[in-house]
Amino acid sequence: QAPDGDLLRWEAEGAAGWGPDGTAPYFRRVWERVGVTTGAAENPLNQAVLAAAEQAGIPQVTFHPDGRFGPGAGLFQLNVKDGVRQSASVAYLHPLDRLPPNLHLLTETPAYRIELERGRAVGVWTSRGFLRAEREVILCCGAFDSPKLLMLSGIGPAEHLEEVGVPVQVDLPGVGAHLLDHPEGVVVWEASRPVPGPTVQGWEVGIFVRTGIDPDPLPDLMLHFGLMPFTWNTLPLGHPTAEEGFSLTPNVCRARSQGTVRLRSDHPGAAPRIDFRYFTDPEGYDEAVLVTGVEVAREIAAQPALQAWAARELAPGADVQGRAAISHYARRTANTVYHPAGTCKMGAPDDPMAVVDPALRVRGVEGLRVADASVFPSMTTVNPAITVMMIGEKCAAL
Image (cartoon, rainbow, N blue to C red):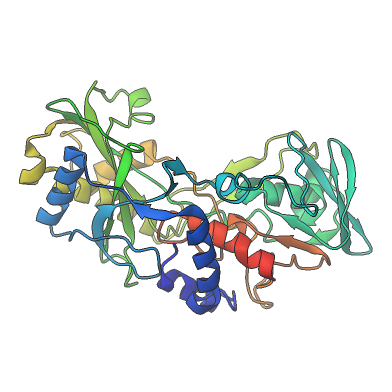
């Protein structure tokens, strides 16, 4: 879950009531549902990278299902019960013998627009027609589609809405702005022998480091260790691959670059325009952390514990040396880790870019809330899934 330091930052950024004390009961509800566990370190290559990290000065740790968090290398927590991964659907819906009378699910039913009457959300237009809300409309469409649906409904930055022909209902400049992510790089090695099983998901070790670039006491660099050559972005650029290999993927924990989500047109079926704007922060912070992450990955791989496994470096390759060359490589091969957030951010009344208040209510509209990763005031240091579920639990209690 989000460390206490992240949640304290949320409160400081205007999300009153979303600090450690205000969220703890809802995190506990999520744990009870999804069964947070730590996998067994059975794979010998996982054991080797944990030992190599320790030899590089990164202590082995056990990640706890609470707000305590610091630098270290350990096995990622798993959301597993009885051998089954617990997604939100599996954890909350599958145990029901039948849906309760106050819950109706419509699958394959895209939402087109929120209907507003005199400043109040009264329902949603869908592919099956109009659905009227007796009390409120709550968007849980994610960091791409929640701002998209708001903008299709005329709620968003007025200038952009006018450009695509959507009548402006509420001028809310923060809708679709402030797109956050964990930008990820990759370092790939060929393995000198077959990479063994067993594995639960292929990415089972997390390594968190304080680079010293950010004065925050929380780690600012996260590396995932993969039991495969992860070459999606390197192979098209001519870097070699191998049948047997492994990868370390450095991530910027709290990237400062911010992207946008914008409408392509006023047609609900048109995909939104998504621009992460990686590495555009004026201080160059994101670039500096990612370059350091490549250096840390190489340092781990050079330790004695991995020498029996590491053959040649496939990407960026031994010829890529120096921070400028690493930066050029990292910019060309960076990718998303599928953690988009922040495009309907929560904030204080005096924050002109806040979209929702601490009760998740959309500014300027009655009867409309948003409850998903789009309301993040800032990015969590860790992977965000459990924190997103917590938002759902807290929204249900509001």
